[in-house]
Image (cartoon, rainbow, N blue to C red; front, side):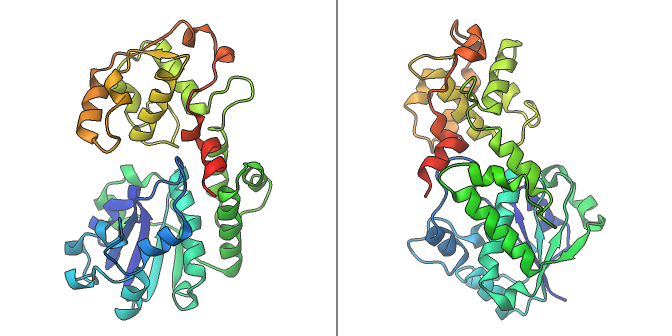
Length: 311
């Protein structure tokens, strides 16, 4: 039996767990910024063209993937699965919000390919894949379920809700039965909590950043450490963007963030990382005046801004 695992970037360790002939981790971040267009996503999973900025095969470890030789890296994901007679395609996506968004996106994509859709198996990953040891993953018992038409319908409904220009449809998901996609509901709750509060103008993570800084955590490496904030929506680079929004607006709530960050190329990871490490953060008088006085200067980096611009 030939197996392929589709997972999020949190599941890269599965490539070393010897549970499949090929593990494909998806690196797209759907929780911040404008969503990629459907054509862009289709190109990502299809055959490689000179114009492709990213391709699914870029993240596949060829040495751990007997199904994917170097000459096949230009092929589409489904072409590889059909060419090599893959029997099962397993979906390993943990409860983290971005992973759940990736799950409903890939389900929508695979639904339009019935031959492949019949081979799908959903693994109910109720733990954090990123922290899982590959040796443990090799033998861990993870419940496997068939993917049915109702699962595809729920995924399509949820993806369309997330792509909607306003968040009402997402809020509506909280009151709907989601069947096997049970981890999607708490993920949506976390995402909705990042909308600017009507009372404070802050999302949940922005509020926590101010609280931690007020409590004396003035180093960005402390704030960016996994689980330091108790939220799971944004990665460290996205947290950096939130800090910039709080520090560089017309009425800053944070002082001490290295000013070079305002002018550095967003892709200059080395210089940006150094600038974050040099920073020593504190609250300004405005930021310390109570959350009710604060309105974020760059809400477009959170869920609300993406809802306004990603259509």
